[in-house]
Image 1 (cartoon, rainbow, N blue to C red):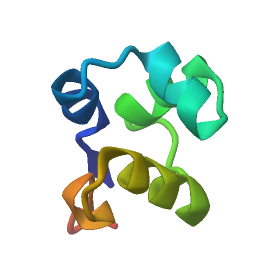
Image 2 (image 1 turned 30 degrees about the horizontal axis):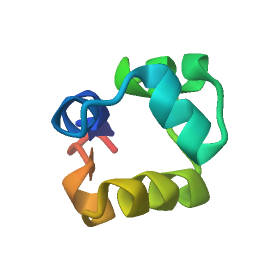
Image 3 (image 1 turned 135 degrees about the vertical axis):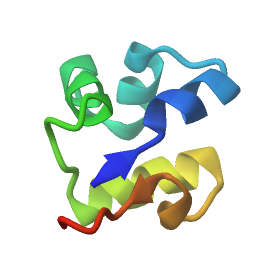
Length: 66
């Protein structure tokens, strides 16, 4: 699964640390998600989508291999 968290952070002028604090995870978790090394839980994905005020599907993109 790919994501565009980094793009959304840039649009909202947020650092990894800013986003991590707002959704209650570590900066390292945000970094791992952005590098596609960590797939977030449904709850975490929903928190991110709510924060950015866009649908989950606009942040997380399923690939054919998923």
